[in-house]
Image (cartoon, rainbow, N blue to C red; front, side, top):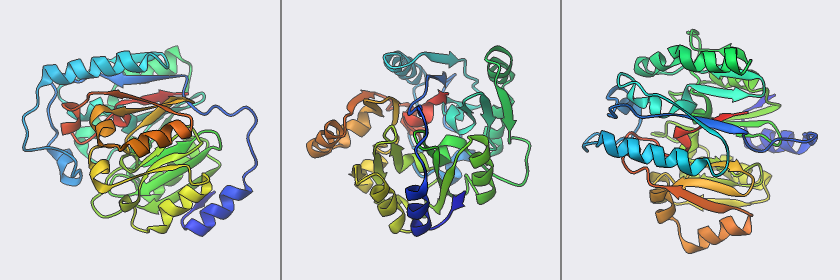
Length: 305
């Protein structure tokens, strides 16, 4: 079921029956290393978070990415695929590739520079030939745009999807992702003007709460409805904290959320106390060089279910 209004969502949320033995977080994840890291000019046309006026240090970006992989290995096994200097945004693989149990999913990117990423045969073969996953491939479709878990936030406990509609994901893309990820309910809504991915304004906290930036949504009732669904266990962000990527986090275990160092530094003591109250430690990694490309920690991590 796909719903479009806050009231429809709350009614559908309340009607869902609990799943048996749900898996709240991934069993592993994969990253793509930055190779001769640079900023993709084409992507900057609809990503206001990119720092096109700044110089990037490829070696620093690579070192930060290596530190990220090491940090996340505290929680789950991490695979790192090699990067390609011709596809600088490939450091954000969760937009292009995703998984559901037994299914490897390839999205349809808006920009040609990112569509090339979907042709990575080594990644496809790892999941289909070695892991034995079936493949759900949207990359060749011309009737949709679907930038996977950049646009789609998933509550894996309930199999609910939250899709922010922008130039990076349309309604047909939301429908395809609903099917590909095996969701029971998808709430599709418009993001605010200038936003490009839902995962900049919404982090799901292992199905028990959320990080939300209220100004990231066209209809202010949307984040209020999401908060209500999770008993208001929400860390609300200011626009400045959103700009520091404090909404771009991920939970790989049920008791820790990972954010960038810049994101954590933007948070108040009261907000940090909220995480503890909701049962989460906060881990962080310095990704300042990678963040110049308009994405942060969540964007770097493709989950394996």
